[in-house]
Image 1 (cartoon, helix red, strand yellow):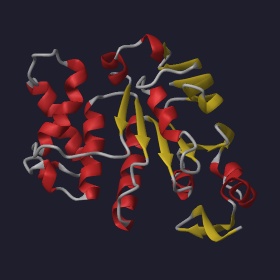
Image 2 (cartoon, helix red, strand yellow; image 1 turned 60 degrees about the horizontal axis):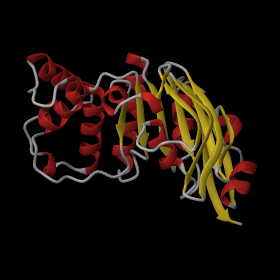
Image 3 (spheres, helix red, strand yellow; image 1 turned 90 degrees about the vertical axis):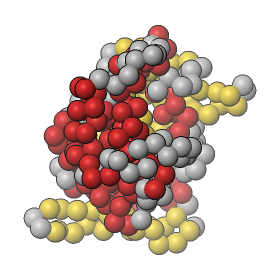
Image 4 (cartoon, one colour; image 1 turned 135 degrees about the vertical axis):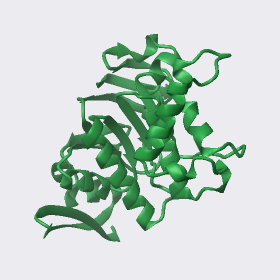
Length: 265
């Protein structure tokens, strides 16, 4: 579903990342993890065609992103950004309907089918009872779920998220992750998720999803693989200069892992 081959990106003479390669199949979750400023958001913007690679290639569902216009990209990949402004008090249902823009003409209005899709995805993320509320009156957690609904309304096989839980409280973060798990189980979405929280990858792995992690550092993905292989105490020390401890435990018949930061080095 997503293939990146020897991708390099630079702003002028400043190299942001280089020689990145990865491949994702249907129904996989790939967590992109690394320090601030390592290039995660820039790589995501390249995946979405918002920025053009200096060299290399990115394909979505077998199509080269560099040859696709924004409307075609929006039919293959939906995007949930890291930051989102609320400039106008649209109703929640109208925000979700914006996810149908890739399928409508410039002067078209949403069809009955579009509205049915919007209501269906709001129900799927548990937000249907908010459909007539002004979008500006939602909490942070509610806002993120509406953004998920808007992305789902695009009906794309790929969902790309940039630190979607960064501003959520403890419960809403967990509810958001639970929603993502259910979506993958129900629809076989392929998901790329940039995150500052390594335990997200362990969470997905513990729910028996096909979960992989890329550790981005020194302008490249230095290691990628399953969370158990990548999220080691040694890798946390070399990447973040911290001492940490990986804890394994059994809960309700599931083998779970967490990595706990102890102190800076």
